Length: 107
Image (cartoon, rainbow, N blue to C red):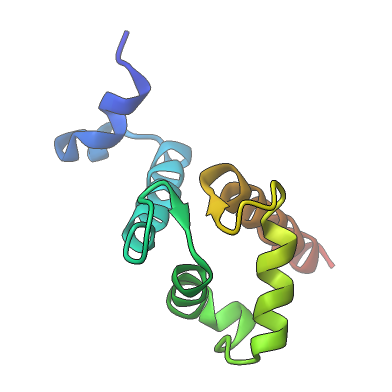
């Protein structure tokens, strides 16, 4: 049995991954691409989240430039009120956006 972390950390295994595993790997990679630039590598600061939204989801949201809207998004994602967005909060957000996109496509 291969440990989950081994699947996602060995580049030569990408060809063996299912589409779902590739998607999971991309979620993990995107989080870590932006986390840790301003602080803890296990969380996203408001600035890091803004960069992620602009670069990775700009075509869905448009460019995140409205400070009040960004504050509201950040506050709603920061479920534990730690002042940062951890991986679980990030994945919950991406799952919610994915569900909304699926609903939109189903109409």
